[in-house]
Length: 236
Image (cartoon, rainbow, N blue to C red):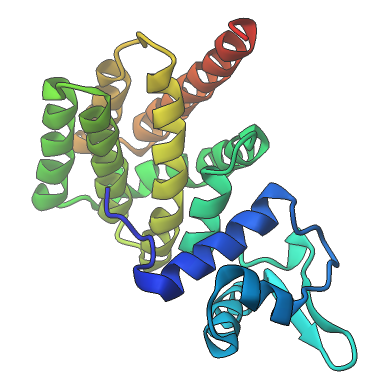
């Protein structure tokens, strides 16, 4: 999976500030002491302000005259921004976010599978088949995650809807985190049969079967994630 983390001092500063918000160290409404923060991070005030501009553009930070720079409530965040999604999915104890993501996938992906069954080209089907082959041949969990992402990405591409392509960029980040969670829990059920059923229905240009197969895949996916979380709790 492509690494979207920003590079250099600017990127590191943005990541550090975002982590403080996500961890709750900086709570909603908290006013930031910029001079003290600049000194703590050992960066120029200009560099700090540039980093804060990034978070402001993502809705996480606000500023008002005579009030200062403060942390925005979560409902103001640009939740579909790829960085914001990544920061949230990699934050500890964020099972609730993964559950929300599962709900979004349950709305989007069955409909996308139906569209793909109606619109997929030979090239689209080849891309999905290639991803499925990679899933079968995956030598480790990391390769399995990459293949799973490639399958879902190619499915959304096969729907030939530009808005779905935008949503894919967000879903992919959360899907990767879910896959990592499941694979970290030890042996898992073989994901290939459920994905193959989706591909077969799309290849047969059967919208009803494709939608049903995707719904069944997502139910299994949610159950795997829930089981992994329960096993992790039991082992503590």
